[in-house]
Amino acid sequence: MCDNDENKKPRWLTANKQFYRRFKYNRERLKNNMTSAEIILWEYLRNKKLGVKFRRQHIIDFYIPDFVALSIKLIIEVDGKIHLKRRAQDKQRTKNLEFIGYKVIRFTNEEVENEIEKVLSKIRMEIDNLTSPNLSKGEG
Image (cartoon, rainbow, N blue to C red; front, side, top):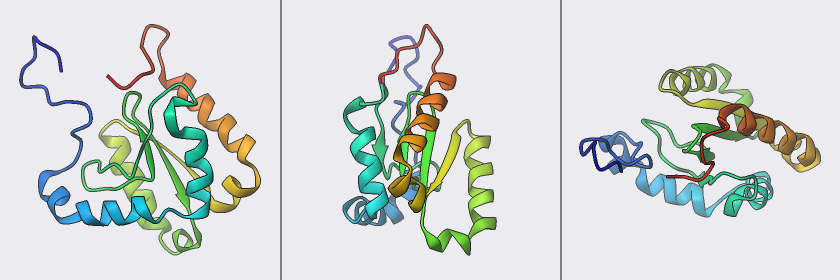
C-alpha cells in the first residue's frame, strides 16, 4: 500500500465483502478440488514461473476465477464440459470482469491437457501485452 494513499486498499482485496463471507468456503472447496486440467496448468503458473504471481480461486467482485495475476489483471479460466451449457453466463461474467479492468482468457480442459505449449504461448503473449516495460511483473 502506498504511504501517500492511505485509503487505497491492497491489490489483493478484490472481493465484494458480502459475497466473500457467503462464498469463502466454496472458494476453499474449489481450491482443494481442482480438475486435472487445472492441476496441469497450475504447475506452469505457480511460483512465478511465467514471470508474474498467479493466485488460484481468488475472489474478484462476485466471481471466483480459476487463476488470476492481480499485478496485471489477467484472469485465466479453464472450462470443462459444463461450460458448454453456460455460455451466456460465461459471456456475461467475462463482460463484467472486463468492465472492472480484467483481461479474461479461456481454455478448454482438452486444450490444457493436449496442447499445453499452445496454451502457455497464448498466456505468455497476454502477459507481455499487459506488462509495460517499466512495470515490475511481481505482485506489489
